[in-house]
Structures are given as structure tokens and as C-alpha cells.
Image 1 (cartoon, rainbow, N blue to C red):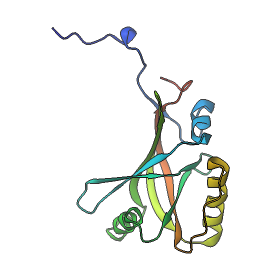
Image 2 (image 1 turned 180 degrees about the vertical axis):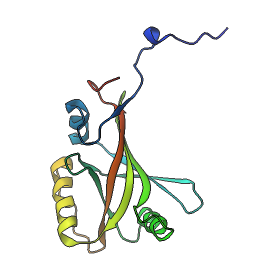
Image 3 (image 1 turned 135 degrees about the vertical axis):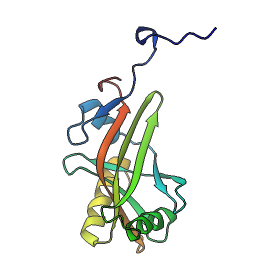
Image 4 (image 1 turned 90 degrees about the vertical axis):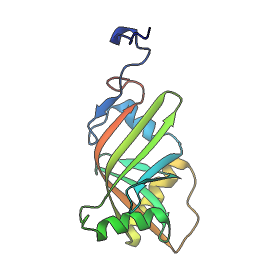
Length: 159
């Protein structure tokens, strides 16, 4: 017969909800490590579209940044959500994991095309991933206003 584990028997505590503007240091450190991430956008029919991306997280500004090609599906999904009345941006999530550690940032994404915003995102990408993105005249910035942070990144509450 199946018997659920009691909280004291669980090998890992449950995931933690984290203040996205004031994450604990282990969570923030995890977002500074070099990890491939995923971006989840929603297709017009509501099904998820998940792709690998590089992400930088700036809790002071309350944003996560993803560089993308302006003709990509992820950009098209974000623009379609905005055209459909999503003036605040499209609902998205970015996630990364390494072993038993994981972190997710959820929020509203908009597309930025200003050269200064793209340049700042490229510099942050270079800092995290230790390489400068190759030049791309079709590059845009997916800027996510983070509304929720979750995870188990070692040392975070519940981690």
C-alpha cells in the first residue's frame, strides 16, 4: 500500500517562492553561473513553445533579458500576445537547472529594439556567458518584467 512521506521524510524540502527584487544570495549566484536556460512563450492556440536561450537576470531593475532574432517564433509569440490586447506584455517564463538546483522567473515580456537596450543586454550576456554575442543586425531584446521567482538553488528558503 502506498503511504505518502511526511515532511520530515522528504529528501528535499519544497521549492521556495522568492522575492524577485531581493533574491537570497545563493539564488542570485545561481543566475550568475553559466547555464543554458529555457524560455517558454505561448502560441496563439495557447500551447507552450519552449526553446533554449541565454538569460541574464537583473533583480535591481526587476527584469530578465533574452537576446533573439526579430524573425524568431518566440518574438512572434510575444508580439502576437501584445497585439491581442496584452499591452503589459506576453506571459512568459525562463528556467534553468543544474542537478537538483533550479530557478524559474515568470513575468511579462515585451520586445525592445533600441540599440542602447540591446547593447546593454549584450554586455550582460558577455559577463554571464563569457563570450560576446556575434553581430546580428536582426537582433532584438526580449525584456521580461519579472513578477514571480521560484526555485531551489541551495541556501534559498526551502532549498
